[in-house]
Structures are given as structure tokens and as C-alpha cells.
Length: 289
Image 1 (cartoon, helix red, strand yellow):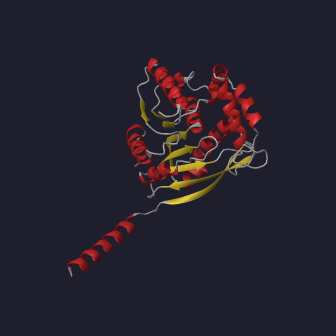
Image 2: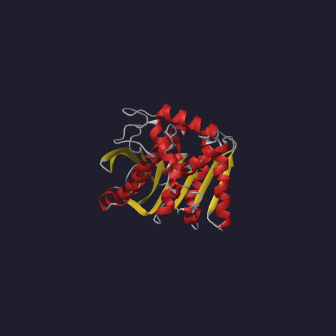
Image 3: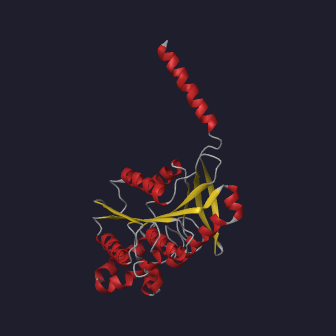
């Protein structure tokens, strides 16, 4: 009888808890306009009818690691979490380029801030955070340098693609390796990236100075940042070390930095990364209401 009573009490408690959630968590499929094309995306919406802060995920090149485990964890912590694919990537319309990806980030931020979208999904656009991995980490830092309305930014194994041409000059072998990879993941008519290896190579050879987030780190001073690097990828550690040194010289005081002994997608530290992200979001970006 005690066991039956316990089960009944547990069921009643669960029912009451469910009833107390006015709006359950959900998922919304999105089509986001960007310069004549439509970006495929979706948003994990957090439980509750109050306005939620927004975490925007920026995937890497080409985007095999989407970090959706981190998105789900942030949603459970009260953040609406938006994922999208840049133009010309993974089925989004248009052609992929680094310049287009930068523009797409701006368009997604404008989409979130537009009154119809903000009101429909009860978004707290005073608390927008960016979470980018690899190329997405570089895009996140560049967007933060340009947009004072971004509350806080997390960059995981950020790729400073704006400085890639200088690296190629010092290390010709790295250019050959990168060009081979560009050709491997591009196709003018299909995917995962609709472009050509030569077009992406030429774009980085002509990259404007403002694409180098390390050299322009003064624009990040005073911004809450989470910088994470993996020790097994030399390029990731070099970028991480250079950016931290620059921020230290600028006396930036809102930087949380750490490394994991791991590979580029942090395969062995997914749970630790979730915990670190949630702790940082709460402390640096403000707890959801």
C-alpha cells in the first residue's frame, strides 16, 4: 500500500507541475530573409510565457558540428536558442561566402529584433548572446565588434579566417591543405556549401583588415566573452593565445578563458562544456527571468 500511495503522490505531483507550466518548451521552424535568399533555421523555445533571452548559434565550416546539445541545455536554463544555416550552406538559399556569412549574422540579429518576431515569441532582445564554433566563433567575435547590442559572446575554437592569408604566407603547406579542404566541401550546385574552393581561397586572400578579430580586439574591450580552445589543434591554440594576449594588453576585464585537452569539436568534453556555458550565461549574461 505504501508503494501504491507513493506512486499516486508522484503522479499527482507531476500533473501539478505540468499544469503550472503555462507554456511548454517547443520548437519553431524558421525561414529568415537575407539579401534575397532564405536561411533555414529553427528556434528551441523555453518553457514559460515570460520574455526569454536569446542565444544564437553560429556553426563552423562547413558546419558538421552544430552544438545542438549546448542549445538544448541553454533552452532548459530558460534561453530561447536559435540555429540557422548561412546562405549556400546545408540547403539555405543563395551562394556561400565568408562575406555572405557575416551579412547573414547581421540579418538574423535584425530578424530577432524586429517587432513582429520579438512580440510573437516573447523575446527579450536586450539579452542576446552569441555562441559560435570554429568559423562561427570568428563570426561571433566579428559581429560583437560591430554590434553593441549583443549582450555577451562565447567563441569555441574560433577560426580567425580574416588572418588566414598571412598564415599561408608563413606556412605554404597550410594553404595547400586548406585549399584541398575547400574543394572537398564545396559544390557550385549542391552542398554542403554552394561555392567553389577557388572562390573561397581568393576571398580569404583579399580579406579586408576588419575581418581579423585579433587585430581589432580593442572593439571587444568591456564585452563579456567566453573563449574556449582545444589544445590538440595548433591553429586553435595560436589564435586563442594571440587573442588573450591582445585583450590582456587592452586590460579587458570581462573575459572567461579556458582550454580542454581535446579535439576541435570538443568530443570528449560535451558535458563539461554544457556546464561551463550555463554557468557563464548566468553570471555574464544575466539569469532568465
